Length: 224
Image (cartoon, rainbow, N blue to C red; front, side, top):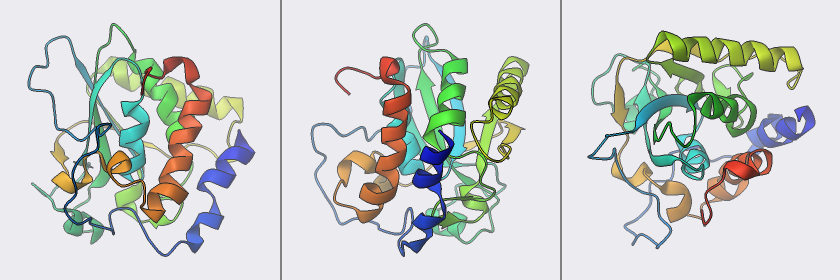
């Protein structure tokens, strides 16, 4: 896995001159497979998990493909600015990081499984304040817990992955209490499927999504 992750998230990606969020699209109609959406209006029977693993476009799609996940929303968390815009977060003055909020059915998928996907497949949790070509604290890895049980799961999973030597370096993901999640602008929601022509999606995001598909094939929705 170490060599795979190096090739997916490593230094070679720094050659790209585009970055997550830098390509705001023109108006487009949603194709049938679009996952664009916001928080479910009915949360009965659903739980919520909040993770930050670099560009939210790939994280949103990766978790959208997992059985038991009702909806994933791209947004911002971990900072102090209320109702931040993408531009404000990119200016590195808000303290926020690009984040996804996952609404899931705990009877179908556990928080533990989501944590396993997050720490071993959807991004490289050993990169400090960056993911591939995206550099800065707004791309830092973070896991926001809501309960003592979730905190324990996160810390235990980190210890297990570190002990497994799956990565060359130790995990640097922040494990912090959840405070507030701010949904991102409409054009960020479902971006992965809406804009397959995007160079960033094709050359960066797709590798992360495919990595999740490869490592967790039995947990994928069918059809996606």
